[in-house]
Image 1 (cartoon, rainbow, N blue to C red):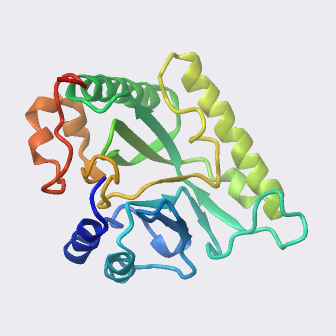
Image 2 (cartoon, rainbow, N blue to C red; image 1 turned 180 degrees about the vertical axis):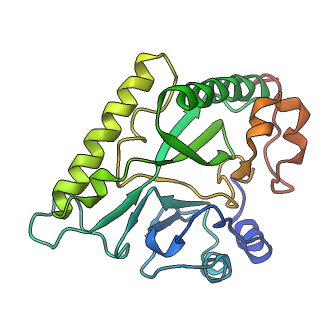
Length: 243
């Protein structure tokens, strides 16, 4: 892992990427410090510059964003909390996470091919609109979609709405798993899930989580991997994991 000063320097000169979000202020932000302590943002962020100021001071090793949009994304009560007023879910991004361990070129290329195959299948079989594709900075990729069916978000009772969305996402996840796609089964259906934020450094590899184009995803990794941003002391992407 990079030293704390390296993370502070990165966020002092690099803004995170929020351009793919309609309203970043509706999402929860969390980050992990080099000490492994977790911080949950106590304010909302609507611009990369505002978030950059905070990250520059903390120098986190990992930065994450929630996959759900909330009416009030600060101080979210846990789902198990039955006494607090439930948060109002406005939207939930459909996210698929594909990782192939360990961190090496050969496995990352396999992850790219699997992600491309999943994207093609979703195009043909589900009513989703592609919002973003990210290289995670580590061992794989994120596909992020919006759900074109807004019916569930009109359910008036907040807990019922969130439960219905989770159930719908679980059904979608099962369809994907039944097709044999190697997605992380803990991500897609979880309305409280956080994913790595584009523009942030992966604390273990030193490579930046980076949005890529659909064209990039369709091409062999060797044609564009050199363009991916990373810290000057980032881990080498070896063809095989050892040697």
